[in-house]
Image (cartoon, rainbow, N blue to C red; front, side):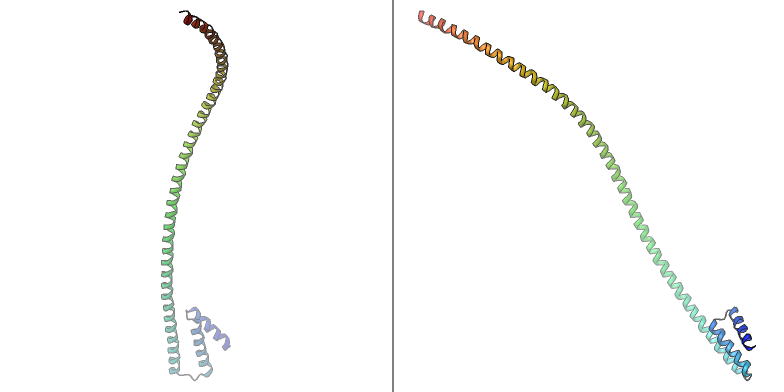
Length: 179
């Protein structure tokens, strides 16, 4: 019976918000009081003072822990804010780099367009050179034909000139000796 009452008292103290350790001590004190029935009011007040001291000590510890936790939470929050600011700066840098790459891409697109225009011009120039090659080939053939004809004409002229010279020499000699 005493065991059940002790357990009920312990649960009631816990529900009232008393810490486990304190509840144990209080239940032990009351259990001893019931068993010995010789405790006096002074003993009870001393026991209660002990319980109150333990509760104050526990409250102080909890307050200290709460302060330390608050300080820790502020530190962690501050560090996360610092890290977040660094990430924001890094994001800004990446955005600037992306903008630069976009500008570079635009420049390369313009350069590609220029190269396409240059390629088109070179194709036109190549076509003109092909036409010139055809014309020069035709001109070479005509020149070869003309040189062949000129060579024949020159040989014929040479023959005529030789004939003229051959007729002029005796005429000149006759003129020189006859005069």
